[in-house]
Amino acid sequence: MDFFQSIDWMQLLRCFVVGGLICIIGQILIDKTKLTSARILVIFVTTGVILGGLGIYQYLIDFAGCGATVPLLGFGANLAKGAIQEVQTSGLLGAFIGGVKASAGGIAAAIFFGYIASLIAKPKIKKQ
Amino acid sequence: MKSIETKQEYLDYVDKKSPNSPILKNCFNAFWVGGLICSIGQIIFDFCAFKGLDQTSCSTVVSIVLIGIAALLTGLNIFNKIGKFAGAGSLVPITGFANSIVSPAIEYKSEGYVMGVGGKMFTVAGPVLVFGISASVIVGIIATFFV
Figure 1: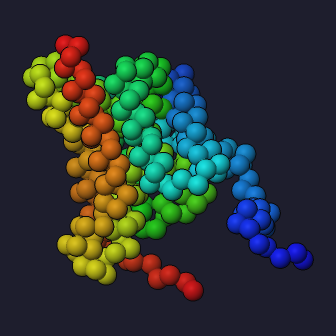
Figure 2: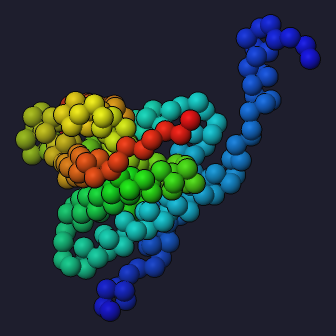
């Protein structure tokens, strides 16, 4: 198939390694600190917004593609990128519109699929 | 055995008794599972690009598909098993965000479909969105000074 020939294997390898390394950072945070997973997610997203706002994260995205965008850092960077782009077109108003607009797809999907999935799931009975 | 009197002694005692989490093994599992999830995302991205979508739409499709899969696997109780094995490997990618929405929603299903499922969905995802979106608004406001 044409598509499989078009895959850039080096790009895929960079994606794998960078994505994996970002997860190792998360794993070290879990094992070495007493942070709950919710706090770790918040730290990752907020760090992503800061790195995205400073324009540093874009270099990692250019290098690793989805290895940088799929982790929550990328979600944060995307929020920041959207806010900055919208500010350029519509000024201060853009600061409030841009971020959510850029990640609306992900947020809406999470809410929609999340609700559907919880409807089909059976709550598990806790074993004593 | 000598008795435990101070808080510090108690903490030392707990540290000694609690099993050492094998950090190297955890990191290795987190690395390859996390890398694999990102690689699946990259293949979806490449496929969308191959079909002629622009970069932004490709990224959005990747997020939506990965979130959809993670939500479904959480609903089928498979994601928890992956999570136990991979730790941060499945938590840090966007799949962890989807999982954090679905698992409390399932847990509180008995409280009803509006306040139970609809309300508790955001016990973990809520703070993520609050801090993420607020930070992006701040970034946007700062950016207005540089435009």
